[in-house]
Length: 239
Image (cartoon, rainbow, N blue to C red; front, side):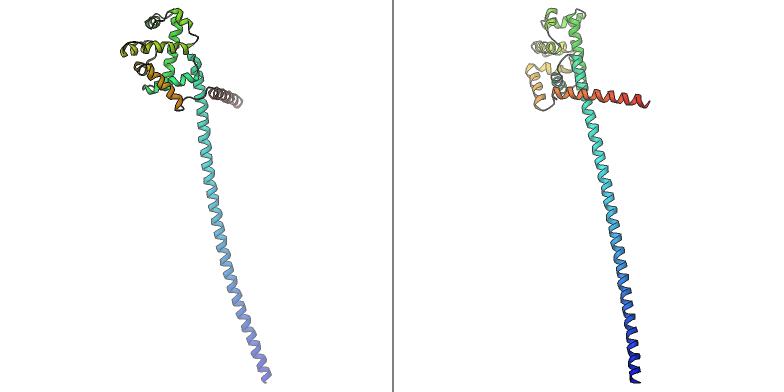
């Protein structure tokens, strides 16, 4: 009887232990599941954050690239404009930029300076050919005959000789008036102040970095021309 009672008690203890073990395993499994979900959620959040970060970085890079391309295109266009304007006037791009700076310091714009320089070059050409009586009269007032005007090798030399003559005039009023008559209104204020002021401003332009290298301008103008040609070809092919 005692042996049977002992066996019964042992069987009950084993079942109780099994129940305890199952309960413990269930709790461990639940904890594991909760931990797994937490890790999964954390990983998901991390990947989402990483994706958003990469998207933001991509957007910033794209915007920066677009700005760089836009700036590059504007620089090439500016180089082409300088090259074309210098050719129309008949002077170097270096001299053109220096005179543009003088004009800006006199209250005018670079575009107005280029326009006035082209106007001056035309008057010089007409005067030496005897086709513009008013221009001939203005040049004569500075001491230049038609032969003198023909002796100037280009518009840049003609401009240098003419501005030297203007600043040598006795009064500021005379300097301003003849500057206007010869198409140099954009530079009237600087010329009215005299040769030292003009030379100071031209030197200042180079010293402050407002004068682009001539070779760089030439290459930029060529690149812009190639881009325009390519654009036209693409337009024709896609039409």
